[in-house]
Image (cartoon, rainbow, N blue to C red; front, top):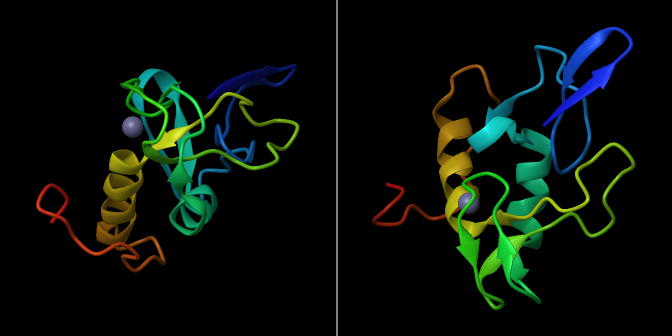
Length: 116
Ligand SMILES: [Zn+2]
C-alpha cells in the first residue's frame, strides 16, 4: 500500500505496516498492495481457515469463509486493517522470494502443481 507523508509517498507492507526502504524484500500485488518477507513468514506459519468471506488484498479475488488464508492477528498501527492474503498468493510469494537471489528465503511450502 501507499501512504502519503509530508515527505512524499511511502510504500509499506499492507500486513505489517513496515515502510519499504528499498532494501527489505517485498512483493507487489494488485493495485499497489504489498507483502513484505516478514509478513510472508508470519503467513506461512499462521495461515488457517478464514472465519468470514474475504477479498485477498494481493490478487483481489473473492473467497468464502473456510478458505485457507492469513490476516495479521493484531494489525500494527500503520498496516491495512483489512488486509487478508489467500493461500494461493502465499504460495506464489513463497516461490517468488525463494527464486530471488538477493532474498534470504528458502521455500517453506511444498511445491504444488500450480506453484512448482
Ligand atoms: Zn490472493
